[in-house]
Length: 422
Image (cartoon, rainbow, N blue to C red; front, side):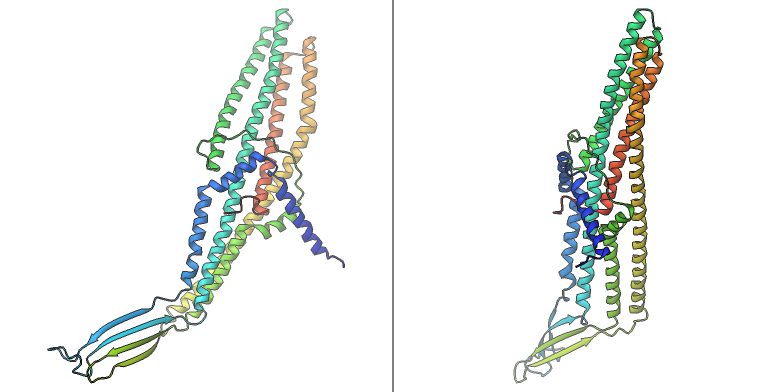
């Protein structure tokens, strides 16, 4: 049996989806633990879950009949005395009635609330995706801060080596004191940057602690993420986003709910009815009586009530459809933006890793050798050390920007990957 190209495309798309869901971030036990903690402790997620539970409890309420009514009273034929048992019109009266909706209205009332619950559930999924993305982005920002501290530490050791060379040459009269001061100044400037980064680490750790619901604000040092290729092309990513986006699903449920409200408004042209029964106790020589009634409401003022309600429902349908299109455009734009950011970061990383960083590392070694023999000035070495540090900063900055772009693409295209219990 041959497989159609469209079916093969769907299978490849599905395999790509599972590959992505299994790859990014899930192999880092620290990050996985933080995500699970955030999904468990987030007050926003818990509040959203309670909102869904409250809405779900409105379903049986919407489909219930109005409460039955019971009444009792007494009728007397005279104002001057009690005539019960003496006059035929004197009697105790008991009655009960129950209102019934026109057929189909109860089902529509339940359907409207069910669709509202499904819309809230989709938005709950979106909130969890945003929470996961927030935790991941802060995690990688924290990794970058630690990584920059490590880079500064390595370059500080290199500047100490330069300082030692300048001191040795200055002691033998082969270098000026300016060379020594320049090396020492650059070393202290790196110490300043390191302290600023340490403060940034504390700030990011506090923000990450708040995102996962941890009051202490202390988190483990992030592991260095592995570079993994992002296999989806833009068209495949667009297919995934249109299928998996909780926000699109929620807007679709809003349209369905608006359609149901239109059907309900159209049903309001038909009358509801009330069935009642009464018992009249007369005593004495007079026989008791009973009565049965059916009461209809007449939609007499339909032009000022039911007709505007149907027009309102149609306008709400149009609004919901336009909002869905607006959401699709916004999501597709965000996807294209993050996809272009991802590919741009990959190109810049290749430039830094394969060209600028190794070349400048080689230049520094050559400059150190040249300075030791008096062929190179100290300012050249220090300048190249600063340039190398800048390129390394930029490389890891683009590395993290790429990971964050992938995180946002995951949140848009993949649906939930962890903590699905609530």
